[in-house]
Figure 1 (spheres, rainbow, N blue to C red):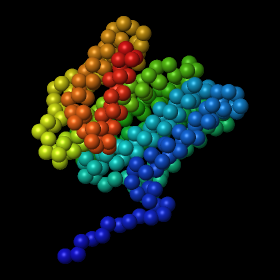
Figure 2 (figure 1 turned 90 degrees about the vertical axis):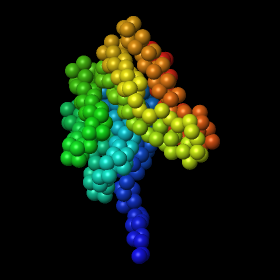
Figure 3 (figure 1 turned 120 degrees about the vertical axis):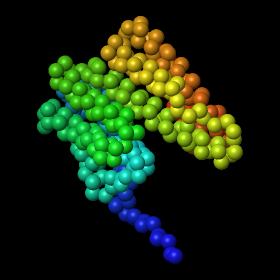
Figure 4 (figure 1 turned 135 degrees about the vertical axis):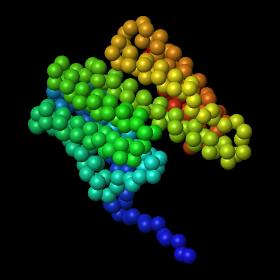
Length: 289
């Protein structure tokens, strides 16, 4: 029996053959473009997005421009791998990427098209992606990804809230913290799946008997406590109870990280760097608390 050869996609079409490709590339490219634009805006060399201001525009494009691109690119790859469903690629992926890019242009030219139009165009991307994920979860009864779908709904809502705060009060005081919280929750949820799994696979190949501790009630309590602390920080950042909750969350997340046996993977940089990266989660909780 002759095995079928995998179809190799070349040329421009290759960019839209996997979900992570256009969004990782586009997110990185936009970060490189947006930074000098922000510096020029901050120093008064150029003027744009005046209704947002330099600080709010920078925050939005970091969180919802670059950040959203990386999150969506990752999930477009991770969710089909977990569910076995067909990935978004080709024309559908091109349309999704175009909507994301349109949001970047809309905020750049917000002074021309108006705040409401810019906000509406920008909000379409995350809202549309959240609907896409919810459809997949419900149609496939994939309740394992229900948490991701819920977090995406909050992510989309935070973006809409960001524009709403700009419109009504002039500065997104709560929305910035809410969005940072949503992204941290995504890191905790997805990191809790991927990091122990990759670590376990590598250690099993090395015939190690000391494997990461599987997800259990401690992880549930650690996640719940961290989410509660982030909610307090979003609404009451200056309260003493918030600082205490953040410190507890940092300690619990540090313990959670230690349970994944990352120190045993020093010989494999691709695995150990995942543990190093996650280490900034408990560190951030402690520093803010």
